[in-house]
Image 1 (cartoon, one colour):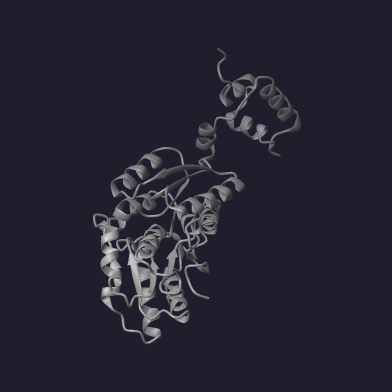
Image 2 (cartoon, helix red, strand yellow):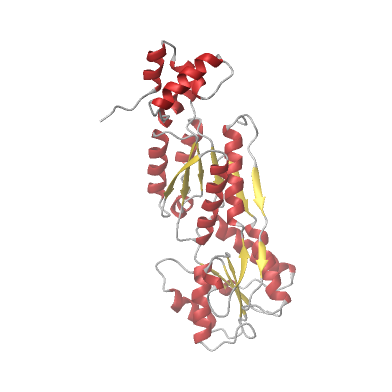
Length: 338
């Protein structure tokens, strides 16, 4: 079996430095045309392939980004990842992607593992358990070690870094106002993400819309369902109040479950019950009736997060940190009245 040819091997062949070989192969103007031609020809004849790790050590850059997302089954995070991947590829970067599976411990271990490898920076959204515990030392340690990071969607004010967030407050406010304007008098909020920063912001947006429209906030209509609770039982108890005529679900799986329960209970949708949910994934589009959703523009968020990190990696390390806010859009379907 032939041994793989290296920069060192080529350097020894022509009695030059490894840096000279590297520059010659990248067609640098610093190397004479004659030397470049000889080295390039030799590399071609001997089927030289660049060793990305060796080049990264030489250049102190790997052009590799670590991406950590909480849940791959969530359509929003899948869209964000598509945006990150497209922008990173366009800029010549590779990705190492991992899933924290909503676990604080896994998020910490994953960051440590990736930092010990060869990567230039991180893009991540915090695990549910991380936000619940409010433990962010692993993020602080990463930044203190000089590894740049962009947080997206689920973020914390305790960490100074670049962030890309959705205007969850305004999205929920606008959705609630839409329900009110289309005739809803008693709107319940359904949350299975009360532990998350985004869940809290969406709940505040809902409450703000009620206050602005002179509707009293009824705590009995703010339904927070934990992981260990039976969703159907909890919703049937809530919907025993026959005056409820609107549901704002803070994520899509709870909206799809709520739709099926409401239909089984004999409600006409949207005439007797209107439903809106975050986010604009596949599930709300393939049920009957299709559910009106709040789009968070996940792909765009991914593109923006990647662009911000790459800009910082390529010379913007001294720039002040920025927080980009992405506005939501309401996509009307059959689960709400016109």
